[in-house]
Image 1 (cartoon, helix red, strand yellow):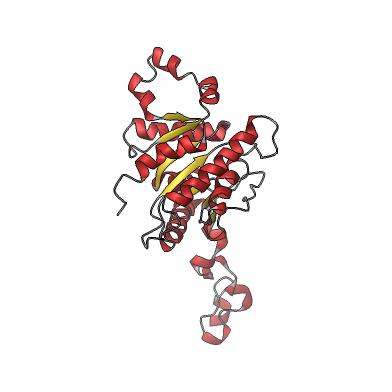
Image 2 (cartoon, rainbow, N blue to C red):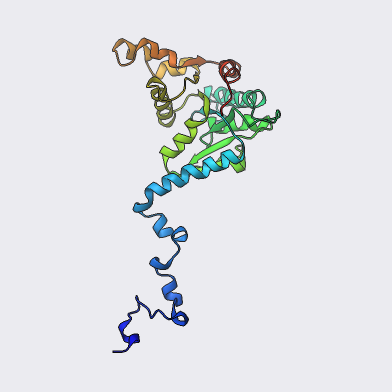
Length: 268
């Protein structure tokens, strides 16, 4: 039997002129690992994909010199066209984004890193309004978008270079929380409640710094969450009610945030 007969199609003859053929060059084993999409998207590489989602955003934020953020949460379902309270919430989030961007350090006119940059989930509604306020001030702002079954479309006001897309909620939440110097939570639904209670839990358990958490529109929040009843039944302690505060105007919300963000030492 000749050498040629001993080699199958999947085990080609090793001589330089006949390997790789176009067919063999496309075999999964021969692809460069970093360029093999089937491999990168396989279950075995899920941990690596977590790392990539974290590192890509981290790299870009550092390149932009963003030291800290102010995170704004709230419903994607409100708009400035609403007849009810949604219009007030939208314009209040827009005004808060403008005030925080003008006065908080996002413009970086003093030569230091950008501080207290508005960051949202990147979508419509309250997120759009807060990004829009930063845009009105001429400041950059961040949109942390997430891939959903019904694709979320980024709003047009987050800075294009700082508009990200995540597959994993966990990594998105990390980036929302890890640079945050304050959280301002406007009325919203399941997604807003998810973010709010996760961050309250981090504060309650000492897993995050004691940053201000502001619930916008006291009547809304006290209407949908009976915090006092939770205390009465011993589900939380009375002191846990000090983990957050309420505001009913953009100016009041910024006053609370300003007292913390502009009186503490800058991050390393």
